[in-house]
Length: 155
Image 1 (spheres, one colour):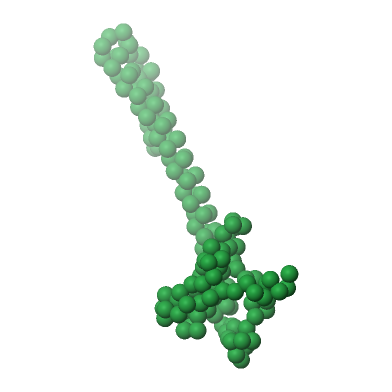
Image 2: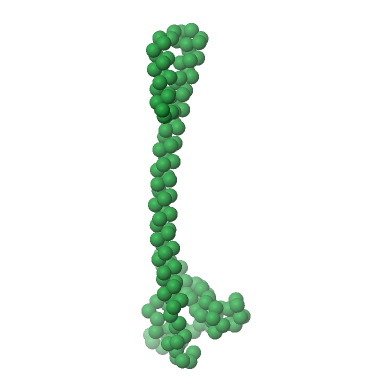
């Protein structure tokens, strides 16, 4: 028997006993049964809301798992390819050889760039650092400088 059914049963018992609600005992029992009915309604609403939230959280968890799988698969593909093999000498490296210079995380103002230091450390940086012209590798301490000379010549 659910809590709603128990509450309805008690209300039915009270009505069936034909209690005199003008006397103190009848008023008290009637108030208790009404309180139980109200609490039952609120509790049922809370249970329904909890179930709905739980279903939504399950869906969010499935979506996050799918995103994680996609990202991990993409990272594994990137790790398998060594861009250094494409260039025999550092002077042969040209940023124009890559279609995508940075990563866009949905906000057009926040593009994240990536550069690989000679020590092998991959450094992520933003547009502000790019405009500053250099960044220091946190692993080996080498200063990596960025130049816009090629871009100006093309224009």
